[in-house]
Length: 512
Image (cartoon, rainbow, N blue to C red; front, side, top):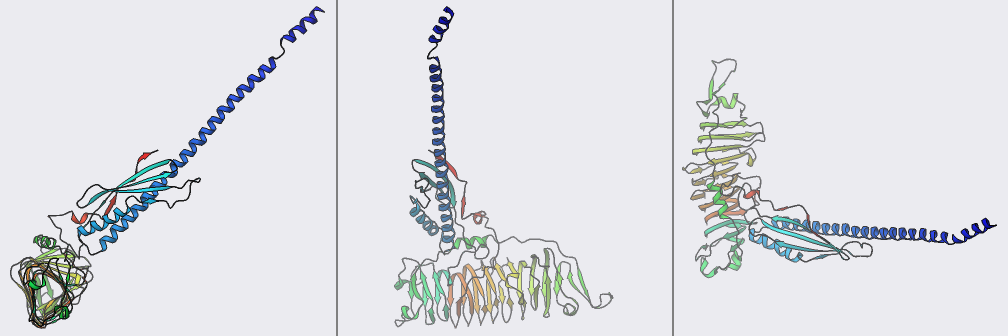
């Protein structure tokens, strides 16, 4: 009986311990639940912030790249216009200024938030090329990220075929000092870089298809001399307009001053033509002898097909006479021929295939009779560099179908003769007379250029002075871009390596 009481008493003492245990378990579970909820909520918040941060970065980057592509197109389109360096940068930077501060918001909403991006463009340096920084700040809600890209914009002089300055579109002549238009027909614009008194002299002619482009500040009353008081400039033409030529005279003069040095190449071996190749005692002609080339024997016409040249060569003299023709085959390669004297007194040169032949002539060029060079080939297949002092004279039916670059000699064309191609001259005088005819682009910054006696020029002229008289025709035509002398300007060797626009990688400058 006492034992039973003892057990009952002990049982009564343990009443409520289960409740305590249960409460402790519930407390632990509650703490775990709260902790789990805190971690979950924190993770969600972190995920949401990270999501917004990634999204806003892409918004900033996309806006920056879109703006850069717009600037890139702007630079390219502006460069295609007929503008000089100052105008080019001014036009580009005016559009950049309009873009500066622009807000871009053409984005889809992100979890009920509207993304935006703000664009800033800052110029870092002047000169050529110029450096800029493009900045884009993206924003979604209270989250922002900023990215930047550095880029440079450059300007390079346009080549009108081999380092030549650009002739204004539609120009028939660009003249530095003096225009004496005393007769003839002009179709195309006349540009003059002088505003001095009496720098333009006019007489009666057909100028109704021509405008006279004069620099700002001109005074027609002092600048132009008319044939008499009955001459009405606004009726007869050339019709005056205020417009700068924007012609780069320095570039042209630098091109001439960098005239290439005379080169010495291997001298070809002697070459003999036989009437019967199997009979050494038959009639023969030494086409190449002691370093000179002689195109002056009937065997060339009947027993010699072509002179094959696959490398650059040097000759002492090249002599054409007796109206014979030499065919040169370069195996479609470009070949240089250096020669002391080129004598085309009576003969013809043909170039076979697609290769180009470039002559470097040191002392003298002689033309005679009805001689021709490359009349049956393409104009861009022949180039002549001449460094001698003796004048180059073409008359009668003498023709050069190619380009001619003379360092210092004067040029004289008469009697239907002429050059079909590009002429660059560092000489003091160029004369066309007696019905001379040329499809030519003439660049002669130091020359007095005289057109008279029924001359017809179809192309364009750049000269120190220009005089026209006596039934002359000066007709403009678009420049042939396949023509040109590739000469590096030693004073500015890297000028043509300037890129229009170059960018660096995108970088981030801040992350909220």
